[in-house]
Image (cartoon, rainbow, N blue to C red):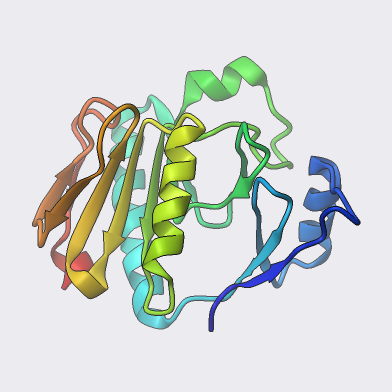
Length: 191
């Protein structure tokens, strides 16, 4: 099952609060919103992608607990990007000090781009759509992004101000200077 896209523009231009309310009133559905105001209804993943995603979040959270400088978010968390898109990466990390500086309402979507995002391609995801999403993250201030593609046994690394790096069958990934000391073992992710 692929995502459904509802184009409401120009008939309806939802505010951030209105979009938040739609999401709250339909909690069994997973929504994103494009910068053009399209509402994207995301299908649930299969069990294999769900397990991989759980492992990714677990490993990132374990590192973040020890590091202590930021917070990890799963795919249930929405971020309002500077271009007004509302996105929910499979995993994300944000420096605590950035969150503290804006003092956002903890019950609402986080109005910022994460420092790090991770997207895991499931069997039904379009690679091109995920690649555009990764570019959007970088264009809106994400400093490091990983697109993990188990179907093709590869990882695409997106960094602010750099060309996309494509790694074929890597065994691990480094968080570089964004996630200092974080090394992601890909043995159970790409296999």
